[in-house]
Structures are given as C-alpha cells and as structure tokens.
Image (cartoon, rainbow, N blue to C red; front, side):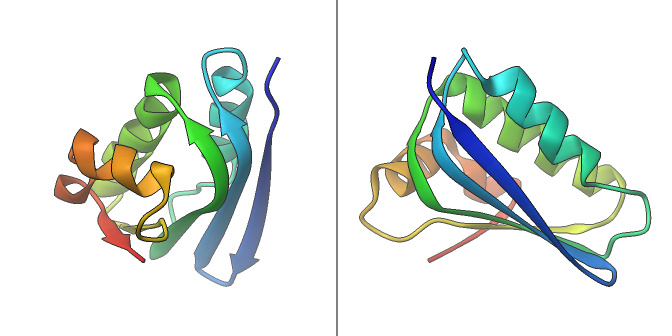
Length: 105
C-alpha cells in the first residue's frame, strides 16, 4: 500500500491542505476523508499544496475534482499549487484542472 500524508493548516477563514507522498486507489478513500473533513461551510479560500506529492493517479484526481466542485458550490476559492515541470503538474494540466480551480506554480 502506498502512503500519503494530509496536513491541514487553518488560518481563520482559510485552509491550506498539504498532500505529500503518493495518492492512488489503495489510499484515496482515506485521503478523501481527511481532506473533506477539513472543509466547512464558512471558508473563504482553500489552497491545496501538491509540491510534496510524488505520484497521483485517477483516484487522486477524482478527489481534487470533487473538492473543487464542493468548493464551487460553497462559493469558496480553490487554489492548487503544483510546481512547474513536476509529474504532478503535468497530470493536472492533462486533466484540465485549470478549468475548475486556479493552478499556480
């Protein structure tokens, strides 16, 4: 089983979620539970930092797209950080993540 860590940093009405390790089908349910548990209805902005993520598959992408949709419904800004040139950034670009969330270096 692959491992992923989810660290949540609350800053008033914003949340920063740091994902590290690898996200795939074997751990995506646990990651999704931790990520969604950190979101409440009163947030103004959520940042998902993927700089420490070494691998993400379609199960991990489903988490990000589901989160972006939930935040859209809550009218909460969603920013995804993925450094240029990384495999994670390439996957985000190919998946069309920029259409549902702000993707930054």
